Length: 500
Image (cartoon, rainbow, N blue to C red; front, side, top):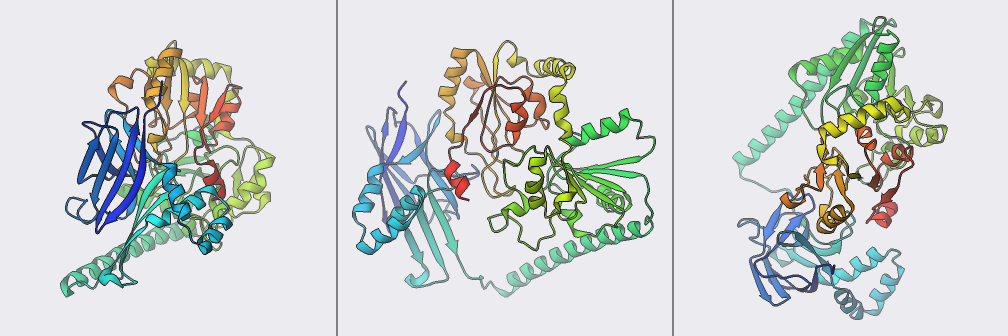
C-alpha cells in the first residue's frame, strides 16, 4: 500500500502572519484540519485559515492571537494534518536546496564546518527564522520563531522562544508575587527544617546498630520490582523475625506525600539500619547518615545501556560535579562485574562499593514454574493475547527528564501496524515509561490489535508472554535477551541521542 504524506514546500511571513504552503501525497485534504501541536500533546492551535486546492494547501497562522486570542506560547510545534489519523508534515528537500543556493560565501564556509546532517539542515533553516523585537530594536524583549529539525523527535518543528526582561508590574501585583514567593520559600524551608529535625533527633537516639530495615521509593506505590524479591527472600529465610521491616512508597516523584508519611519518612530514615532504594530519591541526599547505617541502591534497571547520574554531568538535565545526588549510597548492587565502573561513575561512589550480585527481580526469568504461572495469569488479565503472537513495544521516554518526558506516538504508523497484526494473528502491547505524560490514544477500530499496558509496574511479567520486543534505549533488552527471542531496535533519533 502507498503511504500518505504531507510535505511543506514553502515558509514565509507577512507581519505576524505565518504562511505554510505544501502538498499531500496519496491523501485527500478535504474536511481536514491543520494545527500546530506541541511534542507533549498538551497544546493544539488550529490554523486561522486554510486554503485547499486539490492536493495543495496554504495554512495561515496569526502568531499574535493563535492561543485563544493570545500569542503562540513558547514551545516546539509540529504541523499536523488532523483526519481520522494524524499526519505530521515533513520538510520538502527543495526547501533546503533553495536555502543552500542562497548562501553567501562566508555562510557556505560555516555550513561546511558543521559535522552533523541535522546541524547543517538547521543552519539552512535559519533563513526562515522570524524575530519580533519590542520597538523594533530591543535586545531584551524578543519573540522568535525558528524552523528546525528537533533533536527530541528528529522531525520538522517550529521552535517558539520568548525572551523578556523581568516585568515591572504594578505595585500591588508585584508585592503579591513577592509575598507568594517568600511564603513558598518559607514553607519549603520549614518543611526541610522539620524533616531534618525529625531525622537528626531520631538518628541521635539510635546511634547503636539495631535491626530496622526500610524499603523506600519515590517511583513505585507498592512493594514491587527488586524490593519485592528481596523482601520475599527475607520472609523465606524468616528474617522478618529478626528484623523490623518498614516501607514508605509513593507512585511518582512529583506526587506529594500523605501527611503521615511526611513524618514517618524522616523518622524511619533516622532510625533504620538498612535503607533500600531503587531509583532517584531526592530527600535522602539532603541528610547525613550515621556511619553504621547502610544505604543500599538496588537500581531498577539492568545493565549499563543508558547514562544516568554523574555520567550525564555537563549535559542537559544532568547533575553538576559538586552535586550530592546519589553519593549517599554505601553500596549499590548491579548485574555483573562489567557494570561496576559505570555505576560507580553514575552514583559518584567508590568502585569497591558496587557489588555484582545480579539483579533480584531477574531471578524469576530462569524459574520455569514461575513462567508457567505468570503466563496463565497474564492470559487471564489480558484475554486478547490468547492464541496470538504478542509484540511488546517498550521504549524509553524523550525529553530531558520527568518534567518534559513524552513519546512521539506520531512516529508509529498505526494503520500499517494494525494491518500487520490482522495478517499475522498478532497483538501489540504498549508499555510506556512511567515518566511519559502524553497518553496513547488507541482508535476504536484498532482496539482488537493494540493494548496500552503502561499501568503494569512490573514489566518483567509481560516478557514471559512476549514473542517480539521492540525497544530503543531501554535496558529492558538485557532481561529479554534471556528468552533468546527476536528484538527490534526502533531508534529514529539514534544519531541525535549519541551526539548528546
